[in-house]
Length: 382
Ligand code: ABU
Image 1 (cartoon, rainbow, N blue to C red):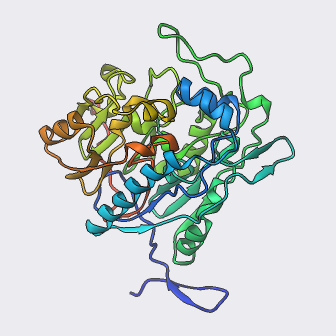
Image 2: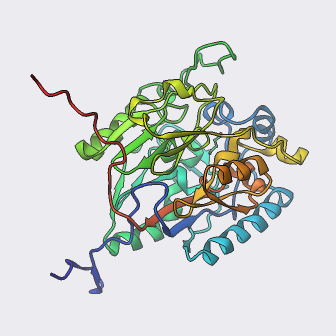
């Protein structure tokens, strides 16, 4: 039987077999979106931004809010990004890019004005589950319209058969942000800046393992956000929550990252391996090694991320893993665990929000929807 077809307004005919299809973090990668640096602008001042970036970056960004990143920060990152893209292509992966945007442009909702930030990290604003692309309801006002720079791509995927959803656009009024919030001290309980006023989440607070997803509550992902996704995906999927001890949690992909069926990389500072969801019993929990110290002072003061960016790797096919060349301890650990690390440089991307996993969005990985966590065998009644 031939596959169903769709006829668009311009009378072109497409097969409905979706060009978007990715169920987990490790199946062979065929197509990926890689973010951009052109037009990147220091994020507008807001507590949700400053609470989640290292103190120095917060200060610098406060001073430079709404201003283009200087060439001294952009150029080394751009050189590394170009080589990363060339590496992906040499591995047979199709690379697509968002539109360039001038993120300095001002915009407003009825409640607040802002300028933009960047479209360097598609992993945050778009979530691919199977053949569906979901635009996420982000909590940073300066990222409110970030998905628009991906719309040319998303419409192309939609026309060719992908499903396309946008989660409810959040209002991001003061009610979403706890006015009394302070970053908790080392021995205090983790608290969050976002309230439960409305659902918010970043896609990067979720990782996929077939019918099971793992999520973390963070400063940009609240319980309503996790529940929205749970109900949206319905009974075919389960979402398990990973408790993070990070004082300023944002994005699970420097905390907990499945690398292959039965193998998950875990951050020992943020995760208590003895308190992982029971569904992971039988999986190998790979404890990430201490990251190698950053080599340059400029990197230390401009990085928007924590030191565990060493974990932000991109799996090519369940064996080959693109990882940071500087993080030799991680490269050696990957080898010990039976992977083939593919070293690449992307340290200078940290001022723009991430590394290999953050900078990409899986569009297509070759493989079917599967379950990697068999349900517990039920005791049969006597
Ligand atoms: N966007 C991922 C960065 C998370 C972190 O700073 O650990």
